[in-house]
Image 1 (cartoon, rainbow, N blue to C red):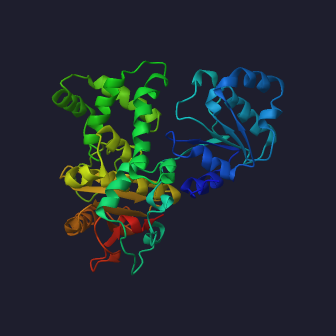
Image 2 (cartoon, rainbow, N blue to C red):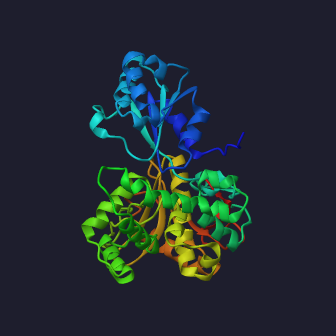
Image 3 (cartoon, helix red, strand yellow):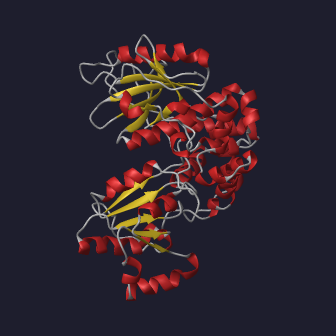
Length: 423
């Protein structure tokens, strides 16, 4: 039996089922939705595309064969039979109890025309991503994001991964299956296989609208080159024209990016809107990011060795990896991940805000020589926030790819190697 790596989603699904009749686990293909659901399910029913007609008959004649069994009952690949959604909603109403169903399936959306009820109040949607470094075992977890909200006097931990290993982790990504593979090329090949499947197969089978694989690849390459920036979609059109010797309209770019969002491939970071002391304009454009940095490396055909020679791209993709992990850890804490940028070009890579209003700010720096710069930016943001209208930050942190140790600076800013952080 293959080893199961505990996931952040384990807790989130359990928490959701304590207050809801069902949970729908969404996310990109291959991120481990079904495997995680199997750990928590009391029983399971797996739909197979070959027998959809049989399931349709079974649903109307003997639904207990689908819905029976210990709870929570896992219904896998539910989107193959979209009408099952309304039946599950009705079953939850009849049982009048929490923790009844877990729904999982392909990231390809169901035919919503066959669904009458939204599921609100019965089935809660929960988003699951690829594995963070703590989930995959590459982070030691000596520094807890949750504990940073209590502003500890001291933190500890020592970096163990080398720059080469970090470049590999970016290219491999957080795909669970890749952890089983011993050879580096095989592990990285999982992300390349995902990219191939996305651009050559999923491109035809999502919303009934035929997408052009070549256009999708051009847009994804441009998006990858501009990852972790707030580039406008119109600029992606210009980039394609300059680098691909072809033209693509902004409407087309928006259409294809909407397609990628439906498949949970793109995971953009919204802008934080704090109360600011001055009349500075806070920008609202989202930070462009994939759900996993390995999608960008696959789109650009990058390898660990190439990243080590291209420090600028290495830095962007390191930021993408950090945002992936911070987003997962924030979700575990019931918070949200944002970024900040204003009209004076003061930027903060990440802001984690909890439901009770507490927040912390993070600057992401690959190189050790940029730690002071990151700390200075954080202090500038601290001074701009109107602390009479909102809480002061619980913490300020530089998340590093090169610092040897986790520690608290004399100015109060925490410095944390990425492989020391956990939720």
